[in-house]
Image 1: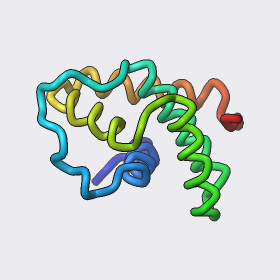
Image 2: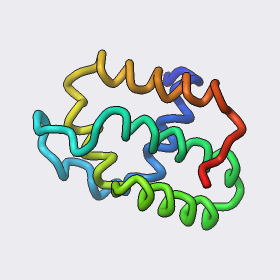
Image 3: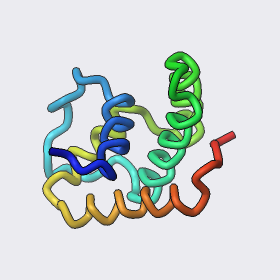
Length: 111
């Protein structure tokens, strides 16, 4: 069973990455963005998901805006996960940063 504290980040990740991208990037390749960029984008996406929980089209608009502002694509997010999947300590650290960032300003939404 997936711990409750990890379920929401996992659901957000799955909502921004089409299943067709699975396996699109090989493991061991360099990550397409820095960990800091990944953290910032994921925090913004989680906040957007929180404020648009009942508005799928609203979330899509906010998601696209967040990705455009960061200069990344949803496939780049998946590529980051795929490229770092062999380093569970790194992924754990990054997701703790995401969690901690949400605690600092839980009610803020990206503009």
